[in-house]
Amino acid sequence: MRHLLLALLALALAGPATASEVKPTPAELESELVCPVCETTLDTSDSPAARRMKVYIRARIAAGDTKSEIKAKLVDQFGPTVLAVPPRKGFDWFAWLLPLVGLAVGAVVVGGLAWHWSRGRNDEPPPADGLEPLDPELERRLDAELARFE
Amino acid sequence: MTGRLRLGGQVVAVAVVAALLGLLAWKLAQGESEVTSELKRGGTPKAPAWTLERLNGEGDLSFASLRGKTIVLNFWASWCGPCRDEMPLLQQGSKRWQGKDVVFVGIDAKDVRGDARKFLARYGVTYQNVYDGKGSMIGRYGVTGYPETYFIDKTGKVRYRIAGPVREAADIDDGIERALAPT
Image (tube, rainbow over all chains, first blue to last red; front, side):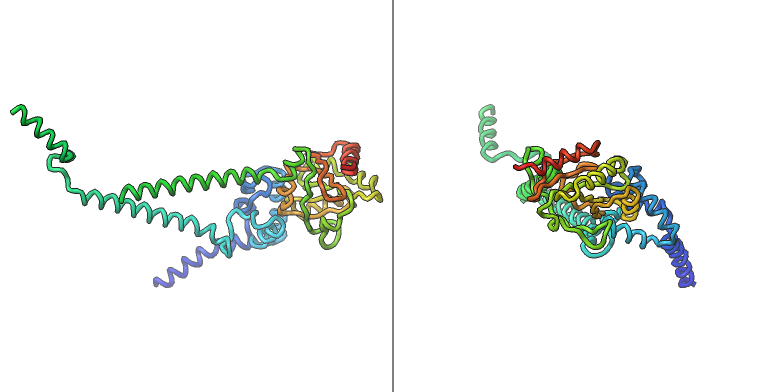
């Protein structure tokens, strides 16, 4: 029963993904592609270059191209920088991995510092009266001064 | 131990800030190409070389193959309004200077290839045009906008630049005369 549910869930999720690949909408492609002149995604740009690319995308969709085919044609013309998100292959993997590596390193550093500081505080014996202990020389002089008044 | 750790942290923080400042300075220095800055100083910078796919013809065209000729190099794109206005002037100029060791070359940058071909056909452009979809020459020449025209002498040095559209035939002739003038 559980396997059947999992299979149905997988099918339910795969359906829209396949539909998006085979019959993409202009809006989703415009959010995944960058205007080469203004360097923002097409859906946020109204520059003449972006408008021409939008026309091109609509023409390719009408011609029956898949999402991958349209992207490949634009990468062929404008280079990989036309993609808003770098592909998960080759050197571009670094763009995906580096933020995660940075987060992991940051977490280790912060954790290490927190551990070090908390351990350092525990090692020091707390002063009995809540005050910092006096320097021995100062304490000796203070005792000598007080003795004069006795 | 804590003091040493703190000092180490401060050193790392200062190093990171210094590296970011260095990166910013490098990026700003890259913003203006050597061609643009040297032209502004009144110099004659060497034109960056290229080999690009022909738009109205077969195969590639290389800058090196034009050596020994005066070149009128025009950056344009089909979606650029002022490019439409100046294109007839450039086409007429190419005819006017034909057979005088002056070649006109258009570089269509950051454009859809099909649109560019239709544009050339619509305006009856017969001089050589190449395709630079990635815009790799934009930064190297220091193109600040579309259209922009560079006048390059026979030794491959940029002698003059028109930023923006060519307004009249005399602008083209003046640029060519400057490129032909002895240094």
